[in-house]
Image (cartoon, rainbow, N blue to C red):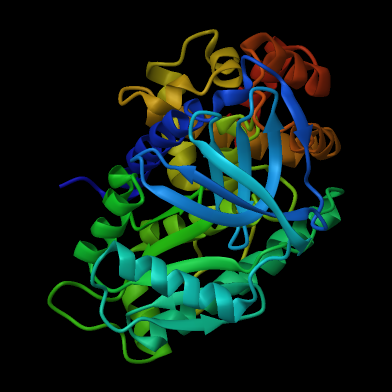
Length: 403
């Protein structure tokens, strides 16, 4: 049996591969640059009628984020889901009266329930609202309450940490959708419906197209019901620290992509998006809250990186990590790539925070649906941090001293 501490990086590799495949299908703007880009929340409301990848006809109200010269569209609906519509798929694009506005939390909860019902039978679904989240679940309320409290604490800590660090985030424009399912079978079924079946091997995933985090109840199994109260939740989740880390990791992705740090469907280096999530993910199961501190040393990642340096790391490892996402999508290199991404992110935040926040700001300003080449990615990094060989040497010295 694979140890839980090593299982989820493989799942993240597979999810990343699915994401890279997805992004490859959105390059309708690559041959002809976007003709128009609209990203204001006061954008006009449109009704777009098109045929999807399965040739089903859809009509989606939303705002057009990118209008390509060849007639293709990047559309965002009122739930925050992104739709790529090629010129061949587009039937009609009609402006409507009024301006774009996100769904209210109540509306989003109803929309999530409708979506799950279209994906299959998930039993009695209920919506729970909090300050920033709408959680739809079919499991015990105790685990839902524990998760919502952790998500809100994570959201506030994330934004406070980066405000103190010199990177200003903003409130999410949309209520953040989360689904929690009671059984592994249901979780797997929804991952398949979401066209990311490999994600079902983990305990959660962030679906970038739908802006949704999907989780499985960590306290329930096929043979037992969910925890009955918060004390029981705390006792049961202590058995699965890696699973709690996965919940925090995926929720961090969702926050980062909604608070202005990353942009969906822009050229976000995977080492950076994963590095940020891993910097945050380390659970604290001695705390009744399961997690409470950003930036704790991730011992599993540290041990993996040290083993990588001792046995497999090549002299150009840092360069290949920065220039391409490929190592995250290969079975034999994924776990090492994740450990190196964590190590680099931790090192830069702890020793070059001002430069790191400036680099984050540059990446956050990348245009939608335009992808940089490897040399540009490397130039962006060295422009922020200097000579790569110096960075690599200092990184390894720093990690050797880290306890």
